[in-house]
Image (cartoon, rainbow, N blue to C red):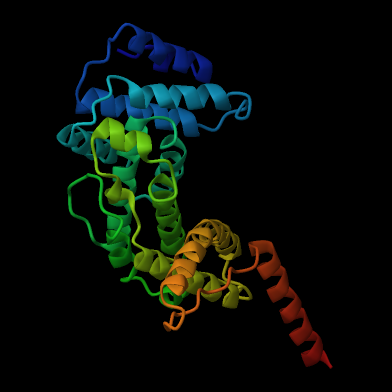
Length: 297
């Protein structure tokens, strides 16, 4: 069905070949053919090539069309799509998992079908990372996020599971952007789901924020370790700081509302936002230089 894949390596010709198949409705309805198309869309979107910047708009529109082709939001169909996609994309390979997380976060804003499928895929990734797998791919209430990360000790993760922590923080960030801190009006209308499924309860939001704050503090303390993970630490800091900034605006409103309701109530203070990753890295570097100078004296 796709002879053009063997005839060319040109990304534009590959996209044109798939566009022609979709124009002619040559790709049948069903989890296998549609799942294959979605995987193709993700691979083309992430494919490294010479004209990466120039082709960005066309690759994005192609990804959108791959997800939107014969769209069906029925729960069983979405479950089957996710099952097939994860069968083709081996998330046991950490590089594949990272690519899937990044692609899902970008794709979710393109259309309802992409947001629906990508939300389910991101939950599946978090399930796998935290050993909470259910084997069912569906939208999940965001109250489950607290349960997932409560199993993860930031200190232990930074010390022994840096790469796993990187993937976990990225998956959490993507889920928050796709759901509670994203636009969910259209998906609720099109898929017929209750808006409450995308709501992160206030107490849970505070818990997630504090967990991320603990991660950031542990990362800052480990900046002087010469173990080859410095770039990954900076990457995790960037992702964590970004989503914490988004959450902080929400939590400030929550805390103010609580104080308005009961000015005398004892409310655990909201942790301060961490410094920017580069500032944190420079601060640690300067501190280490100071210690070295003192030791030399």
